[in-house]
Length: 364
Ligand code: GLY
Image 1 (cartoon, rainbow, N blue to C red):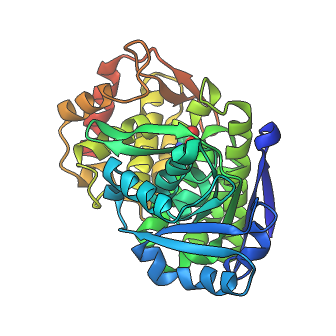
Image 2: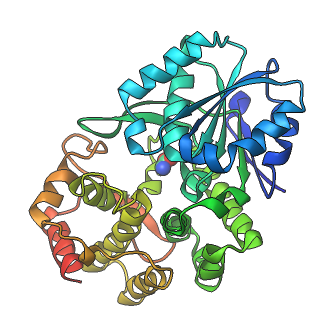
């Protein structure tokens, strides 16, 4: 098992990464619990494939637990489901010294973390992420929240978990498309500031996606190390944490235009968005054609979809982009780059260049 620590003073926490950790979950969570009582919140997909692994172990421990199962899917990250969840927690009379476990992908982690941040004015929670995207990104760093009719993640709070427990074997029941989508967020860490990691992914990415557990553990560890360092430095995204949004300003516009449908997952949109961020940087004379080509080749090699496969309209994409929550004083902050591993922030981008990048990407 590998361990990474997110250093946040008295709110610091460990990320434990390994295989078959679920079968010993009680051993890992017991030191964290203020009293031996917890509620596991999961979704019906994860419940079907993975829940019995946790419950069998807790049944043989002194930890008393209840389980709440919510519908799987992005629609669960809603105000009505938050109310439903809070009512179920109140009905179970969960107390201040009890702990909630978020057991699922990004939807469950974000919703449950937000519920934990406001239930009885805030109680402890543990993340047990079951998708690659949640394991390398959303379960770490304390961003929690729900969607609204006005956009994704617009209502939420920073609330750090007390522990993140990552069992890579949960990825083995995941739709392979979700693995590739989560892998985009792994690649992101190489592209931001770790060119050696990108080189490593060029060699090992396909085997990792195909299911090699050791490679998965190594990639998740390196991703969590990178994320932990950024979060420790800039927890509330006053500056450098925004680098983690590489590809997201473009990607969010694609997702919004697609109506957040399952024919374009968040990670797939981020993969396209990162290519666009590199294309924009090339257009601005910052980044080489060679680096753009390497990224395009890498994502094609692992089977990520391409923007030109979708029927997007540039004007609509630009409109969505202007509604991004990262807008600051009327200006959008873009993550652009001088090359692989050399990303930086700029809020001085001419939207005509962005338009040209969209146009080129859509005709492919
Ligand atoms: N997913 C980006 C962040 O946590 O800041």
